[in-house]
Length: 87
Ligand SMILES: [Zn+2]
Image 1: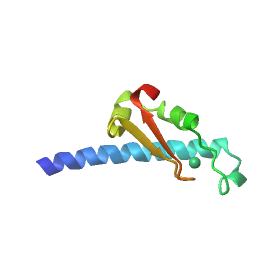
Image 2: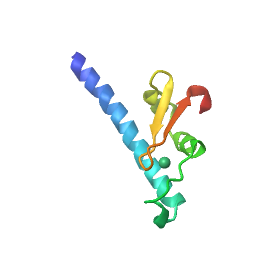
Image 3: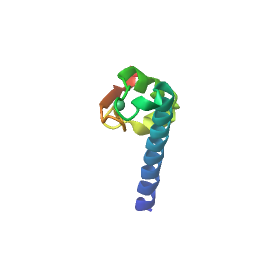
Image 4: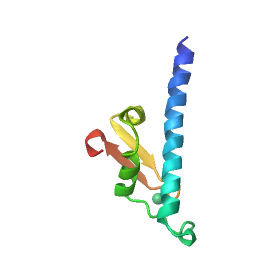
C-alpha cells in the first residue's frame, strides 16, 4: 500500500516535469530562429517565469521542493529558482 502511494506521487512529479520540458521546448523553438538553437540559449528568469505561469496552482504545488521550484534549462543548463511569492 505504501509503495503504491509513493509510486503515484513520483509519477505525478515526473509528468509535471515532462509538461514543463515540453512547454519550455516549444517556447524556445518559437522564440529563437532555428540557427541559434545549437549555439545560444535565450532563456531568462522572466521567460521561465512566464512558462510556469501557464501551469495550474495544483501543478505548481506539486513542483515545490523545500519551498522552491527549481528549473534547469535543458539547452544551456542554467538554473532558476522560484519561490511561491515570485510566481
Ligand atoms: Zn537556457
